[in-house]
Amino acid sequence: GESVGLHLPTLSVQEGDNSIINCAYSNSASDYFIWYKQESGKGPQFIIDIRSNMDKRQGQRVTVLLNKTVKHLSLQIAATQPGDSAVYFCAENSYSSASKIIFGSGTRLSIRP
Amino acid sequence: DGGITQSPKYLFRKEGQNVTLSCEQNLNHDAMYWYRQDPGQGLRLIYYSQIVNDFQKGDIAEGYSVSREKKESFPLTVTSAQKNPTAFYLCASSIDGYYEQYFGPGTRLTVT
Image 1 (spheres, rainbow over the protein chains, first blue to last red):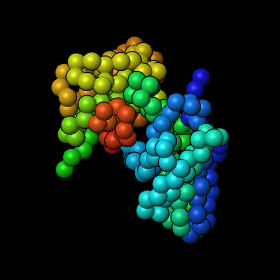
Image 2 (cartoon, each protein chain N blue to C red):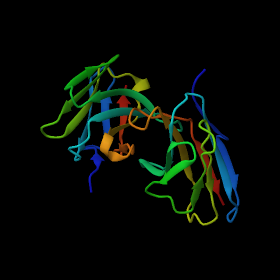
Image 3 (cartoon, rainbow over the protein chains, first blue to last red):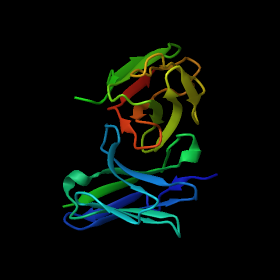
Image 4 (cartoon, each protein chain N blue to C red):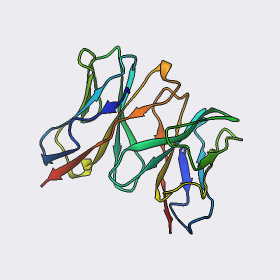
């Protein structure tokens, strides 16, 4: 079936380095993509979103890149900090999906001091 | 403060008992959702509602029930028919079901 997935279940990054979390999607009808951050024991928190008519969107220390040709989404975190340690989920949606956002399985980001 | 609240944060029940988890939002969102999350796993959709007095089953609805009598409230009942109810339950809302979902803090249910 159509789904959103992640290439790496865990990612370990040196503090201060940039982090790149990847996500693949297979539904060509998806036109809205979201990244969430979930800290241990808490609910997911919205980080950034991007519409399919864009290739790149920047926020505070985060950048989302969308490559529709290969159905690939990535989240880049600049100058990774200890507070960035969390599980990151990508999600996709489309008007044709009856409002059911599809979540990926998540990537755990751990920061090495 | 606008937001979405879930109560209680921790809930303990004996096997065979029904239990209701509360979810309230004051964001004036039309769509609301319930997810289940097991340790080290992703989110699985239990039920969702796009409008008051209407709701649809998600991927794992068996053993659960919901109601949507008010726009701001979407309680989830975990029934005794749910074979493995111990999990972290997350409620979310979205302005129209298309844009990003806002999540509550979650309720950790333990059934023994």
